[in-house]
Length: 432
Image 1 (spheres, rainbow, N blue to C red):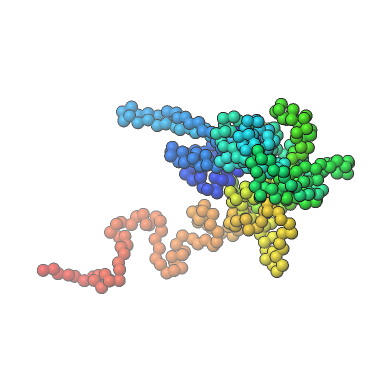
Image 2: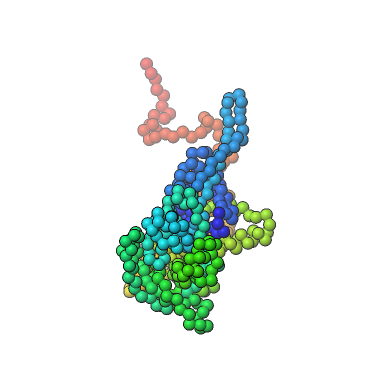
């Protein structure tokens, strides 16, 4: 359990994309978890199997006797599966134990969590070297991040320039791939809060340096004045083994400009599970949980904006801003191509149509006036409605109401007759 819900939000999108929640009776969500209720043990086991394939988990199972019939020797049990998800999250900063770092290809002990799948993907922010940690290795020796990815820990940096980097090959380390080598760059950055106050500039290598250009805004960790939770990390920083800053990702759109309506300018939106929220008993705590959930959701959307690989595992839908932008591009003959090589920015061709979250049809139905059939009104169908029997009268068909239809006897009920049988109706036949 962690103090944020971004891992749960990512898991929620995976569940929606693969339809893993089908057959679920109800879903309840609370601050540090979710409850899924299934009608039988098999569907619950299939859901747990899905979770094992998408995120590192640890499962504990139990059963409780809820009823028994001694005469027929039948007992009813309630089965409970407690699933604990790996507490690590994307962009968490780790300081690995020396033995574990050697087992992971001799990667640097200071590593970032690149993303979370059924394995934990790590990356060295200074060299681009990657490694994968199995769930078994993590649960055998759980790691606590020295800095947990949270908005309170992020520092905004202004990019002043970048230079190419030539990485020296170390024979004892696992070589970085050509793709990761091309992403390295030496960035010259400065804190946004220091601009106009002092001339302090920081030069550090970054694994996302290829995305940056002068004038961009990025977020990262300031390792000079942050408080570490690990004593070994404090000793390494005192020995000068840590960089001054670690750049995490680039900011886009209104978030980079700190616009007040940055969320409304976003090109995409996400579908959410139909879950019942379990509110806290105290109103003050419930209000705080609501604010924390909104902040976690906004941080999760910012992560999606800067990670194309993460977006491939979920369905993103177009907002009205995206539809307007798509229309403007279609009207212009000169289709504006991207002027930079930013392959992480959200493109319009990644977004899907068809998610309607407004209530225009309901408004039109309410404003239409007149009597509406209750069954049709309950279904939420739009359009013009007719009284019961009006459609049949309009088409020249005799109509019997519901009450009269219930009083019809079997011998009076209509029976289908084909055209071949009509010639024999009303005739008497004698058989020898």
